Length: 581
Ligand code: ADP
Ligand code: MG
Image (cartoon, rainbow, N blue to C red):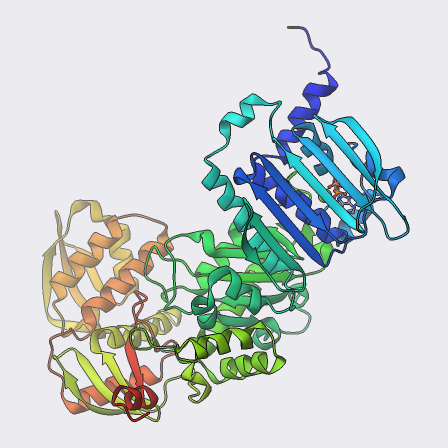
């Protein structure tokens, strides 16, 4: 075929495809426009997962009658005038493509009025062409109705998923914008049923309750970079990154990454680096294959982010991504260290840290929706969080050892009641932190064996495995064939089953992954073999020692595999169980 310029119709459909992937993309663009139009209330209506109809109603500034058609021309926008404006952009839109794209692949009706006009404008477009225009009385603001999406692009229509799936995407999107803009009132109607509503209290926490439910929201920990910042002055752009949001404690996790939500300058973004920064912060706190619930907003100078990476604007680039990574990772980690509560007994409310309690108390005082929620809960006979009476610092309080149960758990008493400590998990945590510290100083203490030990290792183990073991405090060398000679082992393992431990550590190493992941694997495996086992009788002194050491760790509440090291039963709970209250 000779080269030809595509007809306007084909070109516009191709361009539309970049912006409008599925019904949720339409809702995203329309909601972003409403936010840019300084709306206070945004109503979203959806029929049949958006295939049949999507409508977004706002009370924003509206579009003047003589500009309505222009809004549907490609690359027409009121938000930027020159390339330079891109560096200081504060609106969500700027490409001037969304309305044109949506209109090209649907039947679209807009009704809009500005504050200065007495009467509004109604415009109807079919496949991007104006089909009807008239004056129309309507409230100030804009209503955009999109019907029969992709009616003129059968290829696209075929790629739509089930109604339920498309609906889920739209739901997720409205939740996200609800959380990003807690001072706006959002509502979502699905086939005539109100399925989500935010109240515009300005508190992210209130929206969190609506999105994830009260039970989850109550457990979430607040992240504030002002509290978590310990930046040296003059450290590049770091200071400009403001981090705010909520993260789940280590006891609350999900099976996939869908619960990681990030906003950068009010824009909902999908960004691997940010997800990675969060996983790093939860390192060793969550069981493998589990993910936290995170809602974080970052605010930084617009010139530090490139938002013009993709037509959907959900991908961004940071100018100094290392700095952003470090800030996010630190803010999250700090929150976890300072605030992560001890897991409560089954079905019992969790215990919060002092700062957390103070925050919750303030929220209640402010008289927000939270208070209503708590009251509703109280009248429903559900326990109000007992943490109001029982501050729980993140560090362990001094504990007095009382005894051992089932040769597995240490019973201890503290100022706030009873603690059951898993001796193996607790010892793993102690050893893990010790080993990490020693390795950082390149000072893992090893102990020479009285008689060197020979072990057979699978030949695939290779020299790299030996090198890794030697960094962990072993002294191992090849001894011909598949045999190795062990001369020394890390002190912590000296009393364990050395041969068994080495074989298992090496097995773990063969499984692959990055060098760091393999190192970590080896380290955890070594610790697991060195720690006291369940079923081992401990003397009072040994138990006291272990508890003392656990008190001194930075993360006393979980083992390196992410399981809890202890269960707390507060004096309050005991009193309740015995019917004293
Ligand atoms: P962009 O948002 O990138 O500017 P759009 O195609 O989404 O491009 O919208 C084009 C223009 O139409 C916007 O710049 C804005 O002036 C106007 N507009 C769109 N939606 C609304 C709305 N809900 N309220 C007021 N003005 C709107
Ligand atoms: Mg827009």
